[in-house]
Each structure stands twice: as structure tokens, then as C-alpha cells.
Image 1 (cartoon, rainbow, N blue to C red):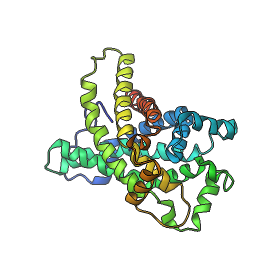
Image 2: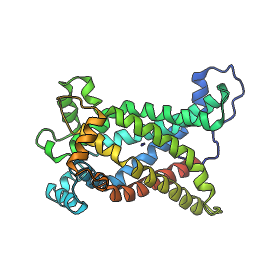
Image 3: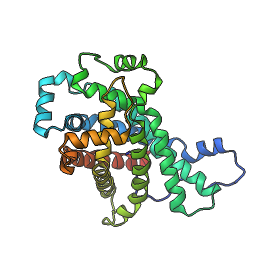
Image 4: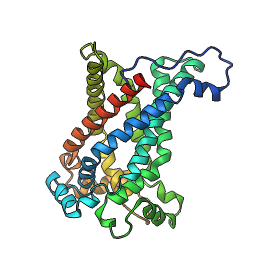
Length: 297
């Protein structure tokens, strides 16, 4: 996404087409977009992790919100933030790449490829999302740590990584296919729609009004994309909750979940309402924080 801007183009204008690509990337981004993305992710994870944990239990077990909250209460407060390190590492890294690479690649492609802007930006978004998938192991470990069925097997991130080691490198990337699909397509929609949505919001004349508009813009997009890709995340969660054994394909796991949930679409979206509100808050925080930091750094 899963996995962004009310966007005026921010990349600086290049002065020479013969300029070496490496220094070009450094000059274009000046690392600012990467840093802002990283800080926005940290802010978001710290605030919304407990909500994400309730949602995770619903995705994995198909239970109601109340039952998921009761599960967390039984686990106790000391386990409430259990598993936060992987998403903190994953989100800060992937969002830094998502925003930073999108800006740099958009500028590079626009400069060196003769194609419409929407095409170069779309390709940049897909490439940024694909690069994010390198950090699938962090998302994989997060899934294991949040599943109470694995509480007796390991108690922290290091132990979870160690438990997967004996199964080989491929085990760390279980669930890669749905992640690639989710990241690429959601990035295209996020970056493509962020500008048009903000343009239709009331004109902001103060800093606080800009902050509100950025929150609304990011929140609406995040909620929409979170709902759209919810079934993909349900399948991804099921795939990643397994340790060892057969690597089942996305269609096979989807079919299994479909049958388990009585072949009803509404059951496949169990927990989607909570995900909608979590995404609304999360991406509102991310987008507002990112845009705010771009102005002050």
C-alpha cells in the first residue's frame, strides 16, 4: 500500500541531461523527502498501533471488533505494544522510500523519458512500491508477533527472526506477491489522486488550514485505499501467519478463506470498518506530518 501529495511538483529543475545519475538523485531529493517520510511514519505508528492490533486479530480470525478487543485485554497491557518494533522499522523505512523514491524517480523519468507526465509518475509510483517490498521480512515478523498463537514461541523481534532462519531466506518473504500488488497499485492511486483531491478542498490561507487540508486529503485517500485493498491484506495476513510448510499461492489461500467465511463478501470485509477509520487517521497523520515537515525543514 498499500501501501500522496496534493502535489505541486517539488523536485528542482535539472541543468544538464548529461549529469551523472547518482549525484543527480542526491541533489534532487536532498534527502528531505526521505527524512519527512520517515518522521511521518514514526508519528503515525506510535499513535495508531493499538488500533492496528485489533484490526489484525479481525483479519486473521474473522472475529468481531468486541472479541478482538477482549483478546487484547486478556493479553494484558504489557503485551499491547508487543510487536511494535517491526512495524516501526518497516513503516519508517518504507515510507521514507515511498515518498523519497517517488520524488526522485518522477524527476528522473520526466527528464530522460519522452512520455506523458501521468505515465512517468505512475511508473515512479510502482517502482517505489516495489522497492518497499524489500522490507517484507519486517511485515512478516510483525504478523507473527501480533498473532497470540505464537506468543509461546518467541517474545521479541530477534527471536521471531531467529525462528524463521532455519527455514531459509524464502520464509522471510512469505506473502511477497500480495504485498507487491498492494504496494504498486496503491502507490499509483495515492500519488495520482492526492493533487486533484486537495485542489477540490477549500483554499487554505493559513498554516493551520493547510494542515487540515493535508490531513483530510491523506485521510480520505488512505481510507479509500485501505477499504479497496482490505481483502488482499486479509489473504496476506493468513499467508504470513504460517511458519514453515507449503508455500500456498494467493488464489489458493483466498479460496480457503472464502469457503471458511461462508462465501459471503461481507465476511471477507470483517474488520474493514475499523480499518477504514484507522486508515483515515493514519494517512491523515502521515500526509499532514509529511507536508508540514517539508515546509519547516
